[in-house]
Image 1 (tube, helix red, strand yellow):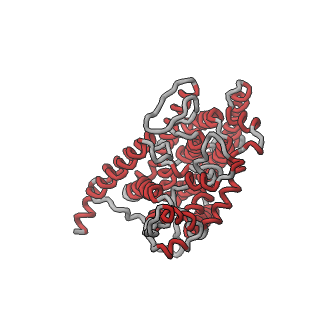
Image 2: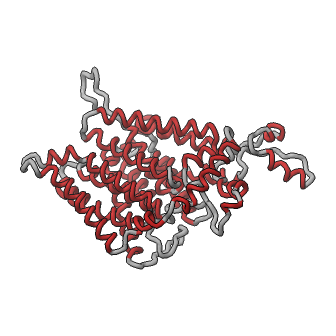
Image 3: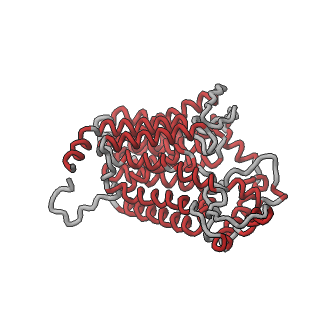
Length: 459
């Protein structure tokens, strides 16, 4: 049985990689929205289940050590909303913080108190658990491909970011390009996303993936480097055109870290040239990006900068509502209100002074919203995930830069960008960013190769 499985695993690695690429392209096209009622959710989840079933039939199983910790975190994420769906007896349910006011519904209907789950909106918790099939299938498939194929995944991510930039450029030029699978807003530069902040995050991720991808191969580096560095001004230009204020900060951080990731290989590439040629390229890239930014501002095309300068802090609805969000957190802490139910719960607790014609769909601080949904268990999970990322990143910083550590360093940087974006928005609630988060965690899970005391090669 084991021999047959090993033969299958080595016979079909190309098919497993093809399944993963098919899932990634499908998520790119249909996974740019976070709303549960979008048709794209059905498409990406159906494709995730299909590719997972095909991979299992082909005998692919996640055997890499690097997948253990990300899969462990993901399984806990799946378990939390499932546990919130377990019905509790009325006496125990009434003791849950913040849940007692909902007992009046049964009293008004003159019915006995029923058994209820922790999740105040059970349907939203079911949707939250079901959405995690996308990162689970991504981890499952990516952990089952060969090492060489896994090294090709940054190129696939870069291609998806560049394709989304192309769509954003067409939108910038006036093309509508309506996507029936997502809730696209006409006239907005958001690429394949429903939210311009999520689009700006993907382009920022492209800014850090491009320099790392340029030097991941030996033979292809001659044409990779010019292509990768030519994409950087395009990504920055689309971030400015999107109107995302947070995207500007993410783009600047990604551009800086991307150049730092490739600094060693830039020095090696120019070691036979004049001493000034090595720092000339990064300075030239920064200068070219600066020219693009100045040109965008002068032509009144830098919507992100215009929104940043025109919006007063007192007019920022997100900052004003964050106080209400913190008060709601303490109302339901430490049990939580249930995953996915932020919208109706915020309407219940929303002060009259904050009422507007539009609704506040999310907290726009995903860390705070996750704690509101999951309570103390979710808070501990966030702390554990950030601690794992920080410890792994510190080990990578202490290790010498090499091609073995380039992919883990890229994963750590991408996760940092996603963490930073989650402070102002909810990017990981979209299938596309879920998928990239899973890949980045898998890359970081490779860690630093430890050869201390080894008498034989690591192979």
